[in-house]
Image (tube, rainbow, N blue to C red; front, side, top):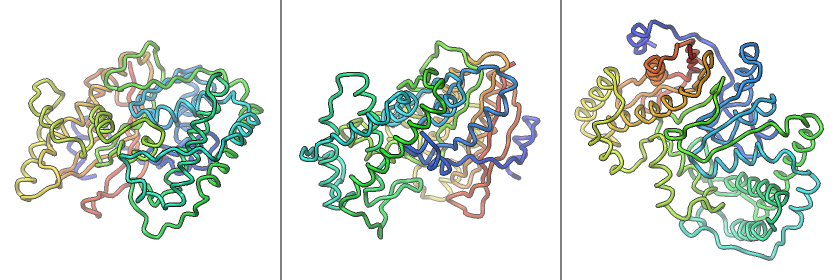
Length: 425
């Protein structure tokens, strides 16, 4: 809080304490959202609270999420009968989000029967570029190979078959980590004492299909008129995707500058569903995303040579402090961290510049974001993005602290997660 004061003074604003249910964990029990959890996302309850807050300002808003993830914003928009658009660069997450919002017309009985028709004698080979024999127990891996082989053999000639098969593939992707020797909290890592039955793949698939069956039944009974509401999930880079629609409300949570590798964290699901055939393809996707500190050194070297990038006096000062601290320490995990920080904000500037253009007058752009501590230097991510918003002719309507966090480097250094609301005049 003390380190934020100079930035707040210059912006002429204050941070308001307002606890909000941001974290995704509550989605595990929510209809549709639970089909394929995405631990880095935010909660349906939070999105709903934002929709409720502004329902008097917008009669029938069109909503954009430029970092769609697994589709929480899009699902919640559709449940409220609002059209929505999302962009997502990770092909696995784009598939999950698209399936979540565009499969509500699938007959639950047809889905159950389609799943029951999966043959159990067709086996594929696990993705060779993954360490499958370490990631899964031998019996579990064998059953996963038969399960995936059976799913692949399902017909996909009609739209009805394609949608049902996509739901089954979505379910398969959602059980992989539960079947493995790993856990995601939020980074992917091995769980030493984890016990998994050989039969877990088939058992968990039945449970997941049952959940989808039940949710489809409720949707088709209670939300019948919502099924036709348009929800579009575009496989695209948010830094480059120019939209045809105009929007009234944008709700998103960009990647945090926290070292989390959003591609490697989902490499198992991406590999098993065929979205990546190897580490080289995964690296290509990662290099196009908003930067994290696990990107290639070559990418950062090329960025450092560029003279055309966003910066301001705050960022220049932060980069210089990081550089001095790294030199003083004599050892740090990435000596090019000043340029990684610079690229992070250059990437987000590109996104904000693009999405501001189709925002209607009076429209709002809400970002859920966390600040950072890098090489003992405080980085007020929310306040820097607020300043970028001002430079793009947006008004800083509010900055609400939703919850406290802790630095991974210095545990007693308190960080925050905030909701930044920018409004177009």
